[in-house]
Image (cartoon, rainbow, N blue to C red; front, side, top):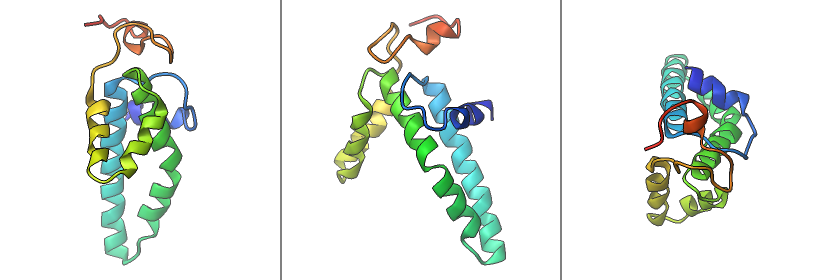
Length: 119
């Protein structure tokens, strides 16, 4: 849950880098919360709670993905490839890639900042 809260603290931060674990833990908790809200909406017969959550999480989701792309050495503009049908699946490949072990144009390696060994 700390990773999800970290992404919310960096609500609209499109600079810097996000480790692979930070991004995918954010995605995991996002999906779990959305699933829970979907159940509540189904029980109440509304779509209100899930819709509000999704709208509130648009900017943090994009910001986390942009920081993740920065960690792999790519510009955040690569997010636009997601709008191309089927070709946009390539974006998932870039989000799964391991981090650049050293500093890149987007900042120092978060792995080294956390004290983890670079592979």
